Length: 617
Image 1 (cartoon, rainbow, N blue to C red):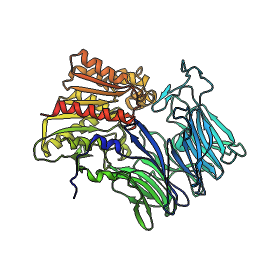
Image 2 (image 1 turned 45 degrees about the vertical axis):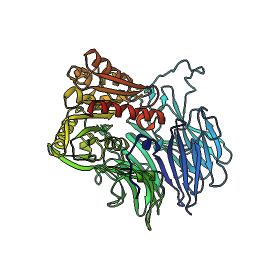
Image 3 (image 1 turned 180 degrees about the vertical axis):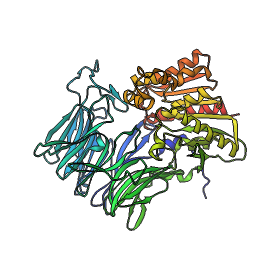
Image 4 (image 1 turned 60 degrees about the vertical axis):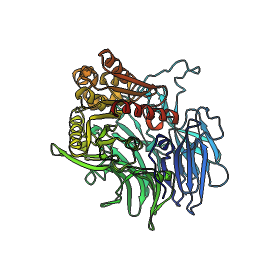
């Protein structure tokens, strides 16, 4: 028997991540996945096709993504730059009939935001365009609306959005509609010879949408709904369904399953599931397969007259279904993601992308539950080997409507392999619980902070932890909460705050979502509610800090702009506190998982080195 080895940074970079899984009406499967090449410093996107006869095909240009099956299940469309210079501006739409080479149908210089089939001969695409206000020399960006920029996309303040019908035989491209405001890609849907999508009504309030129906043959257009938040649409058995909320608790409201017709929208799940529905996977057996978060699990449930759990352990990342087959990407705390198929023969594992981890020591988390003010708080602890007192790192998830649970967390495994105990929990505001639990409006850095402190206290009493060697870390909202912790406590000997918020006032102006997120979550605007913005901002309590702080940020983060970490860094140093800042010159808000592999490797090394320096005896 081969002795297992410790988990390393290189293991993280060798992991395959799954982006989408699509099953056709005939049982053909397309898996969109990403692999990193550290030597070339590239992330490559591939498509893995598993035909219904189990013959496998790989599309390996390195830029292939967004697979979509035709209604008859035999032709795959996808987005790519294959055959073009890797620096070419834009993106092409390709089709593949599962033989020979894929064929390019058309090219859009600004890329494609959303792609779906209209029928077996035509595709529909959402395309961002900026011809109205565009400087050919690239010397300036013009904008007359919000947001000025969008994270992971860039400058979009001059974008309009066009809907095109594309014939796959002739390549003819026909413009169907232009929208001044953003069209939600997951809402693009064809049903009964009509095209449906949701678009923002007023850019100042992007959580209020209109649902548009267009008949591309007659040109008839109708608005079916207005004022709801419409995340996605799906056509199942010639019925239109959507994941929608009515801003019941603002932008953190749970998505609910609606059935939509010409005269009304009926909420089907409102009295049956008080959980946030992540996606509609499709028809399966005698119901609709839904992906939901539930107390740390990501489950697939079958929705009809009742709710039946189909996959109820571990963590489902994504999936899709036809009547007979359910295909999904699934992970567990000690098993990285793979793709599985469920049908009347049972469950079959289809991929072995990450089986190299079979030779690696991985650690199972232990679930812990505490009750605070009659509210159950779920948390987990991962302990390394050995009976001596362990240094501990408290991880705080992003969101705030993120969720920790039974997923595979590479960074946690890395730190446990280096001798650290890990604690993590789902405080108020997290996903996976009832809608009331998700409502943290006006309570940032207060109720959530109190619950995390109580959870940490519980862990210190139960486990063999060296309370003099503890660190706290998090990204985004987790970075914000890290900043809150160091301004409210002296519990930690190190803090790593990544891409977080320090000052809600400047976030309102600079973030791509600040102008609507902050009034919803903090309350009103800084001009209307300045005291509350200051109260919720760690920056204004900087004199309380005694913990050494490392701030990590990416220069292309338009969600939590770099001024947030700079504000912390300048204020800490000017108050004679210990602060270091690492600014990566590239990378979006999600740079910890999406950035180039060399960037990600250095981030792990820097973070591990800092915590080792501060916590290791």
